[in-house]
Image (cartoon, rainbow, N blue to C red; front, top):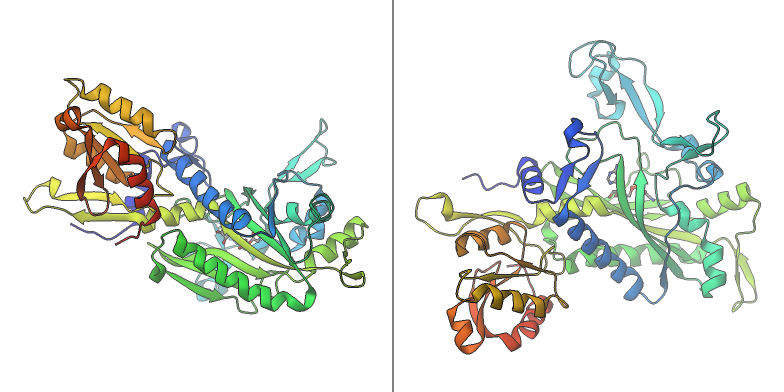
Length: 449
Ligand code: GAP
């Protein structure tokens, strides 16, 4: 059996087990958009919660925000997105396909030759990635409004509000999770690059002379986060942006890249945005956006910003790819020799504990339901009584459930159950009264083999 992790396998499992569905599938699908099913929404929420805890609970100097997606159009003029947030685009006059010019073989681009059909390409033109729509009753262009292409700007325009309302002192950060929209030309590779996606961004405001120190600090912090998330660290690497890759706002930038099935690709960016954004917003809004440092002789300055910008939906794809394994578990020469297992960190797993009665009859189903009822205040649980127990374990392995509890005839006698661990498939006997503490301890001490 081919045990490599391919995008085809991930897409197939994601659909089969309710992680991710194609948007509007019954109408043939909508490119660039995906729907998150029962398992997917749980996984996405858990990643977001993990990140949120990391930022706001474990860092005393970071607070949260949830800004609106629709913002005043001047925000995007000030931020430089109207002018600079573009991809170079070419169209094929023959097959009508559209390409990013920087992703075509330069020799073909020079000859204006379509990489797909050999037809003639148009000249390269700038294509702005922001989605435009209209607000208000009249559709004459006066109500032009954009769907935000990044969550960061919502933080910048609220930075003074937050200083005033929460008495924040520099250095401090503001964290936000939310949707972003980009009219991406190329949306292949499943949910890797989509037109609608979610970001988890944190903007850290610092004294101008201290930006390099904080930039290094945040690079370290972001690397450590993935270790805590249980990701295989040999699948991650740093990539520093060269001068021609730097965004219009950045002085220095590093990406953390993950080795997806299609190769190493950007997972998140750590950017030194200098005082570019706040200076521009001060200029365009006419508001004074200087920080007044009352503890240092009322020194006034526009803070520098260190940004950590991660894709939530992209992290979900990473979590799936990193967890996936086709594993040989027996040698009988049948399909049952193999299992597909997702080795999620238990904190991320959509279901933490599945309760399975060995049989439906003899009161075992009722007993199992009762145990489930006891555990569901503490854990995300599932209950499954259909089919052979081995098949039920496999079904749970496939969605990454770290713990299965089997209720059998012995349970009726001595109130003990079987606790099965997903990764090792080890089974131990545990008194019902100790289940909660045993599972909590196993979650705390979890290490992927
Ligand atoms: N505020 C800075 C910013 O938005 P970015 O590098 O353009 O920087 C940050 O995006 C992260 O957002 C990326 O590292 C990626 O994880 C995610 N992201 C960006 N575009 C995306 C897209 N079209 N689909 C899915 N995720 C995307």
